[in-house]
Amino acid sequence: MEPLISLEQALFLGRGETRDLYRRYVNPGMAALLGSVGFDRRYVRASGVSVWDAEGNEYWDFLGGYGAVNQGHNHPRIVAALEAVREAPNLLQAALSPLVAAVAHNLAQITPGELSRSFFCNSGAEAVEGALKLARAATRKRRILYAEGSFHGKSFGALSVTGRSRYQEPFRPLLPETYALPYGDLDAMESALRRRDVAAVILEPIQGEGGVIVPPEGYLRGVQELCRRYDALLVLDEVQTGFGRTGKLFACEWEGVTPDILCLAKSLGGGVMPVGAFVTTPQVWDRAYGGMERALLHTSTFGGNARAMAVALASIQVVVEEDLAERARRRGEQALAGLRALQRQFPSMIRDVRGRGLLIGVEFEKPTRGLAERLTGGLINRAAAEFGGALVAAHLLDRYRIITAYTLNNPNVIRFEPPLVVSEEQVRRTLNALRAVLEEHRSFFSLAAGTVRSVLGERLRRG
Image (cartoon, rainbow, N blue to C red; front, top):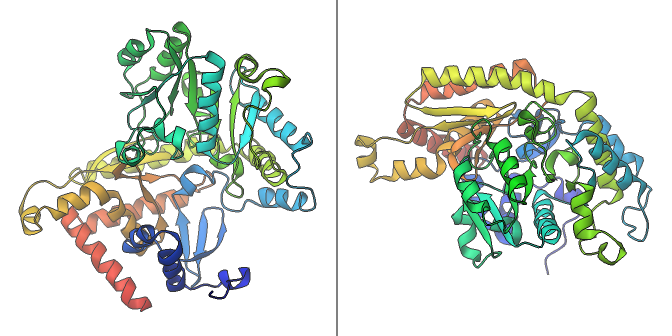
C-alpha cells in the first residue's frame, strides 16, 4: 500500500501530480480532456469574480460554477455562516431542525405563487429526482414529458428526462413512460397532454446546457395553461436560472408563471456547500406525502444538514439584500449588447448570441467546406462540431486568463455566466478579450492551430 496523502499534503500537490492522480484513481479521460485545452491549472484562492493559481496569476471566472456562485466566490457573509454553526451537530435526524424550518420559510417568501413546502437534498439532480417522484405520487399518473435539448442531471431519473441521447444510450432502458417533445412547440405539447394521463411536464425556463436556448415568448405561460387544462403538474427546473441569474429572482417570473413544483440547487448553496431543494404547494405535497403514514416516503440522510442550511440562509439573504437580480439584468444588457456587436463584426465566426441576464450563450459558426477541410481530411470540421466552443475558451484562458466553457448539449456554444457581482469594467474587458481572439483567428482552422500551439507551449513551459 502506498502512503496515504494528508490534507496538508493535498493542498500543495503540484499540477502534474494532481493530473497523474486523476489518471490513476479518478477519471483518465477527464484528465486528458481538460489537459488537452489547458484546463488543468491548479487554483488556490478565490474571491468574488477572481481566482488565483498557484503561481499567483489572477483569473476572472466567467463560468461561475455553471450558476453555482451567483453571490461570488467565498462571499464573506456565506463563509461566516459556516463558522456560526461550527459547533452545532451537523447531522441529527431524530430532531426537527430550526435551520431547516427557517430556510423553508424564507423560500416560501421569495418563490412565486403558493409554493411553500420544501424538501432539502444535496444537488440539482436530486431535486429533479424528488420532483418526479412527487409528481407521480400526487397525481397517480405515470407519464412524464420533457423537452429535447434539456439537461436535468445524470442520475437515473434525471437522466431519463435529459434530452440528449449521447448521455442516455449507455444506460437504457431508462425510467419508463418518459417522452421528449420539441422545446418551444405548444402544439406538440397539447397533443401529448390530451389523453390526460400525464403526471408532469418538466422544463427549464431557459435551456442552459442545450446552448442557452430562450423559448418563444409566451411558451412557458402556454405550457402552464395546458397543464392546468389537462390536469398535469408543471415542474420548472431553475437549478441554473434561479436566484437572480436571468435578471429576476426566478426566470419563470419573466412570464408570470407559477409552477406546481420548483427545482433549486447551485446558488442556494452560495458556492460553498452542496444544497438542493424542490418546493411545491401544500395541495401537491399533501396529495403525495400528507399524514404520518406517508411522511417518510421520500427522505435524505444529508439533506438539511446544519452547515448546508446555515449557508442557504446566508445565500438567500445575499441575493435578496444585495439585489443581485437587478445587477444581473444591468450587466446582462451590457454583455448582450457587446456580444451582438461582435456578431455583426465577425459574422463568419459568430452564428448567434442569446440569453437573458447573465446567462448568455455565444454560438460559433461551423467551418465551411474548403481547403482547410481537405487538408485535414475533415478533421477541422469534426473538431469544430465537438470542440468549437472549447477552442475559443482555451484561447480566452491561455491568453487573457478568463475562464469560460462550452455547453454540454451544444459544444459549439460557450457560455458567459459570471458571478452576479461582476463589474462593468470586467464585462467590458472580457468583451475586448473575445474581440482580440476573433481578430487574431478569423477562421476555425487558425483557431484550432493556435490552440495546439498554445497547449504545446504550455506543456513545454511547465516541463
